[in-house]
Length: 216
Picture 1: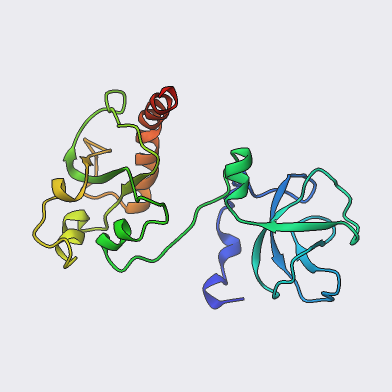
Picture 2: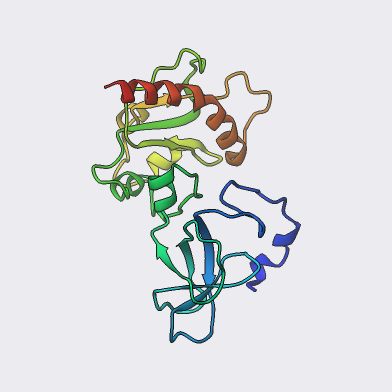
């Protein structure tokens, strides 16, 4: 185990919807490939009472998403299949965690989007942004929304430190620039706190935009 993970067991569990317990069955599970005989496939630990086999031959120690299907037989003769991690969401509408990518600066966040065509709507969050109540906020229809949070010095510094954006104002970088926590009681709000506050703030406006998108 890496030294940075020494005390990870002390952290409160996320208990996310895709973190299934060993007695629960799901058509998809996350697993880790294991060492062992690969003559019939690759053994994978998916958190059940027994390890399972997948038809692909993969190196050990690899995190994979496995299509379990409806057959609950865990015998080695039943082969499962490794699928893209997007399958649970695309096929069944299941939340399946988040992905992380490294961006050297703010502009690369926009340029290196994993979505074809980039982001439809980009929102910056800041105490200097426009204060609109969640019930009155109207978002345009979108396919891919990006919400950006700054560090301790805010997004203004992130823009100024980026050679590709230097000299630009927030209105030139973001389509909306909002204060999701007006009348805050403290001088600053930690980014991890701002994320939770903002996700709640945007929940209803996003639902309204989604409903409008589906009507078209």
